[in-house]
Length: 121
Picture 1 (cartoon, rainbow, N blue to C red):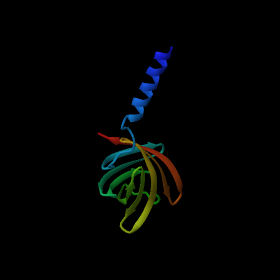
Picture 2: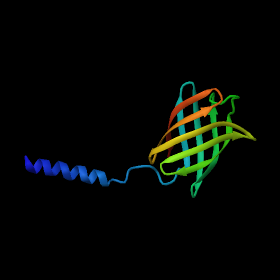
Picture 3: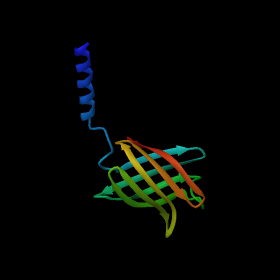
């Protein structure tokens, strides 16, 4: 019994050492969908600055199929602004919970939505 308990404790401690956590860099393609809309982000990170482009269907008012992205990533927090020309379409505030998963709230003119983004490989 004691050996089994010690074995379980060792397994627990080793799992705590696993380096799974927020990504150091958010560069790449991220996708989220929640009916009736979806969003794809193509991000590039340099330092804590994040830029890129995105595309969407049915999330922005007025609807915009493509947009520019600018923001900051301070592990694990990501803040982005989506804009087209000089018009801000939406703000995104999220937490990167693993190297390939981001949970965020996207706020726009007509409301807000919670989205889960998955990094595409």
